[in-house]
Image 1 (cartoon, rainbow, N blue to C red):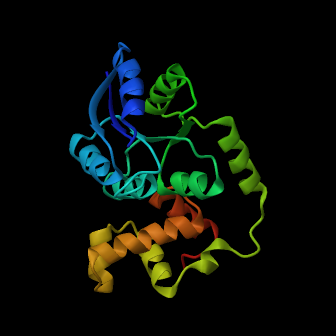
Image 2: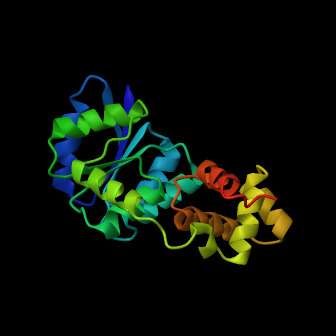
Image 3: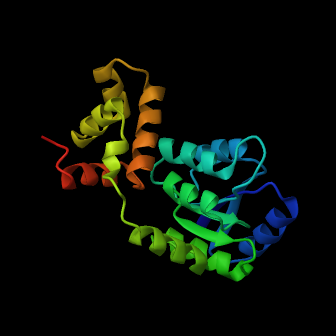
Amino acid sequence: MIRVVFVDDHEMVRIGVSSYLSAQPDIEIVGEADNGRTGAELALKLRPDIILMDLVMKEMDGIEATKRIIEEWPEAKIIVVTSFLDDEKVYPALEAGATSYMLKTSKASDIANAVRATYSGQPVLEPEVTGKMMMKMRQKPTTDLHEELTEREMEVLLLMTEGKTNQEIADDLFIALKTVKTHVSNILSKLQVQDRTQAVIYAFKHSLVK
């Protein structure tokens, strides 16, 4: 049974999608929330197999909620379900750690299939999102991405290549754990990578490790 938490501030959307998913023999809705803050807390408490995340919500939007979840639970599988396809939503959501990106105009059956595919480790992106990502990949940066890192962020990145945890990095640099988490988030964003592993691979590929 695939356990799902659904975060969306539109009650009718939650009722409609949840009813359809609950009727599936292999999917169970274990929790619902109407804002990002509550949704993140619920997801971290229940640790479901899949989190369905809206983007535009009060108190905390879906991008920030996704960041919070991934920071504490990197293995979380989050499917964005939104009405928006603009660059200001698509890229930040995927960079924050979302695995799949669906539209609310999708059929309920398509969302159910996305839940199954994402659970199995296969990201699902709307065709328009795939097109945007392909275009972005073709754009050659004018400078190496790591040149955008601050001196402190570079220090954190190099400690990450040594396999150190956030707490160990905080101890080494004599800074707060929360500060380290912020630096790590900034590093992932600036290097345009999804997680710590990809950041470390980037560091080695660009000979940043001496």
